Length: 424
Ligand SMILES: *Cc1c(COP(=O)(O)O)cnc(C)c1O
Image 1: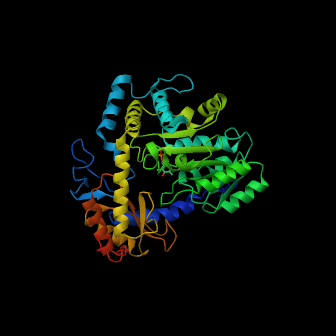
Image 2: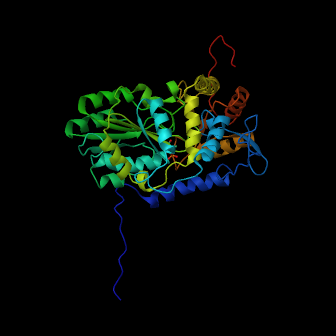
Image 3: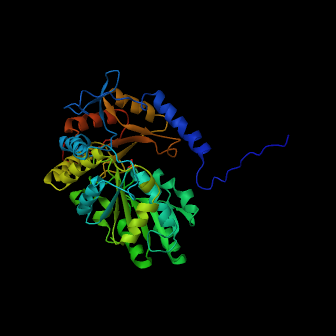
């Protein structure tokens, strides 16, 4: 019998042995400590109690400080009603055929509404991850952008939904990874290559925003294309909730492509691809060749209806009220616990903890009635462990204060009181 061949992978862009080998230990440890794999049992027809509590099966109440629904729009009565009403209005949950062939007007309605909100052309997809998997290869091949095949630079911290597409892009063009927001690296590449595209988060999941203005200068000087995933700042930031990038980037043409999930502060399902300056032919190419944007399912009608309702809220003063409530909670948190993110409008805080103490700290916080997610080695570098806290508009000041008191007890750094002012 001839010897059969085994495979030696190149692992040029991904390595599951390493990913699972390292990551699974993290999840196992979190789960053993009761900080992952939690099944929250909600009350009849309500996501959160009036006091903002969610429940776990054993009846332990907790306030979720790790949920990305920053404005609590996911359980807003108008959003719920919008979903139900759309299902009745269209009389179908999902229309099972590629939109490039036949579509019902549901998603077109949402795209028109979001387009008006952003002052841009909006294409919806079932998820930001799906949008990214469809769009980045089109950028790689030069079909989306300026028509030239670019050197593609992925930021080292680009969200996994973008990093996962590297091997696919690498089959269409050259792909490199840069340091986090390394503007010098990007500029050097711009001097060397006739076209460069940079892929990064507009707002990072561990806090902080992209250097949108500095990137805009490179866009102006060298025609740099920037692909932003601004999922974390959609709705939570900017007038009518257009997000950080749309608020601050002066380059709003075909060189800037922004993708945002509708599943965080916007409170519904799906994602918005925000485009400026593309002609009809290119939009058709996206629709036909954007991978799952064409062959996979669209947003179902309740998701469209909920999205239309949320978009309406974005046009009213209620959005401003919710954003302000979120910011007040963030400020209250910052006044009590110091983190590297203190002072930012971004709703995520990483409370530093020791690698060997973070799980126990998370467990004690959970026992006290709050869920925050621990991140630690090997999922993040040694020495950068911490409890990730996410603020929402719906948390009460009492809940924020009580959380901060527990955090201080488990080793968080209290914010120094301003001299002459009693600590609040
Ligand atoms: C949460 C998140 C996603 C996932 O969004 P989906 O629409 O659920 O795919 C993608 N990118 C970033 C940056 C995120 O924070």
